[in-house]
Image 1 (cartoon, rainbow, N blue to C red):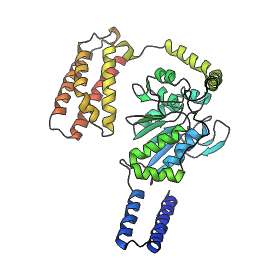
Image 2 (cartoon, helix red, strand yellow):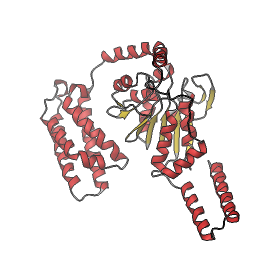
Image 3 (cartoon, rainbow, N blue to C red):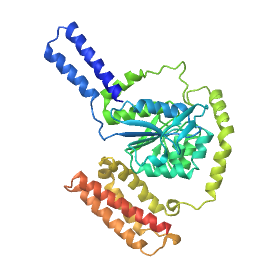
Image 4 (cartoon, rainbow, N blue to C red):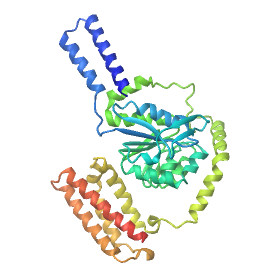
Length: 382
């Protein structure tokens, strides 16, 4: 990273010298342009980004991991590295081995987490408790939690995509995102709060560029694109099922079905026999949860616009929740008191939004309300 910064600085210096000897512009204008260029290069991200971890496992898709690795490494001052459950050799989907020097136990926090996809091995990761628990723990520390391709299956299996907008590899994308409680969006990449998901394989590069744009702005991102010479020009516009010839799209789907459909069907059958979720048993709680999710998570990043927009709706949903019939298996001691507190605190928050309160005060208030909501969820699980 340091060498990259030196290289770019030298390039700018050479450009500056060229202008000095080859142009008739005055010294002040040249110095101004040089300073403007240096300001682009040395710009600081909107939030500190020091560590970027790419999760890998046997069977990951090469470009799912390498595309974001190469692209996000362009963020000056950030350390970008691969991390696996254990140190040692990890094979990608094609058998290429990479030595991984960092294990789960050594990583307690990250600024950006990237979860790549694959095929059968990726599906198996959705059942790996150690991996899922590590992701959930790291997610508490991240500014960006992201997935590429079917990496969204792994992220979805943690429960972190419930109620979120998300995309995935085209293969049974809507079906799989719905299975994990997400709202599928047929886009190249999707942002919902700090959760970013991309479509298949190459889309991880687009998502990574969008993250850089979110952090650094247009000019810095354009510089990265030029460094990558990112200007795709495929021979055919056929990179989605809608654009490919129908027979080709059907062929690819059937090929993936042979590998994955038995696993998917078995997982759905298993899920159907499991205990229904709290939200499916208590619709009024689910309605409050949807608004809370759309309000609280953006506020974590400092975006209070959803809070200011949704505060009245949040208060109304809390009132309806308190008036709703509590399902028999959730009629626990103290439940009604928690619901009443939630209603009162939601009403207070709605009034605070219309008053002269600072963003910091509002952020603390929605965080406290979110904690109260999770007290209710915890009570349901007792």
